[in-house]
Image 1: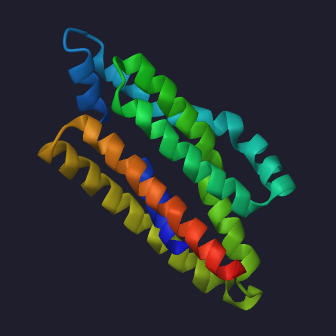
Image 2 (image 1 turned 90 degrees about the vertical axis):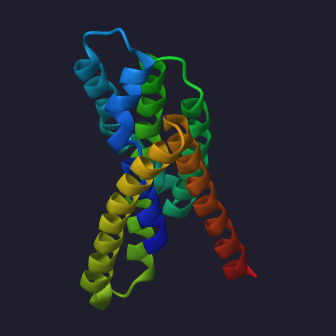
Length: 180
């Protein structure tokens, strides 16, 4: 779950360094780049805010592992159209949907940790988890800016989606090996 926490945070942060620049490249003649980039940057937070309670109730019904798996898979899929978007408003739309899905990713990982760690180790384990989340924030920002510098902005979305897919496959593999 530490690696999952790191990858989820990294996927969230990989886009942050390029949002304004990407919006500007999509709307080169607009005078409102800062405002539009701010809206695009804010849409995942809005999606998370609107869906967090519902995702939490869903997690209580179906379990954290199922929410995490489906969330990783859906987040992976959502990065595909973001790689090919024609304008800033469609980017805002897909990022809003990503925010809805993201509402369950970190809480599900933390719930799984809670269920699999003895109470006397909670402090230590959650401190480690927080460290992995911070590493994910650093790696995501560095990855996003490096990939966009070496290739194009679209490659940041593709690489982030691939990273989430790898995380999903790791979870599938580890779950099958646990059940074998």
